[in-house]
Image (cartoon, rainbow, N blue to C red):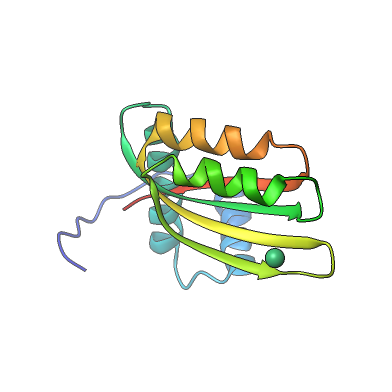
Length: 133
Ligand code: NI
């Protein structure tokens, strides 16, 4: 890793014990990596609050493709935007499909697009996850 700076952090004894238990459970090899992950997560959370910030995101949806016109509507919404980088479609069973959309764009555009998709009748479940580096 490049540009690593070592800094000391003060913990309460009990807090550190609890933290060590947690990171062991989650499979971290050391505290530094766990703390860096927590910081990254917080920085991404902060970025999401800035509407103009450019981010990557994935939108996962499960929908009933028998629902009248739904597949057509979802495709139509997707064709009207330029934030989609890639899509994955899986036929889960006789009725349900799962789609994962990889999105790149301004936070406000990603949220608006996601809200529009999730609001369609017949979309049973969905989750938008932002990420970044
Ligand atoms: Ni399908």
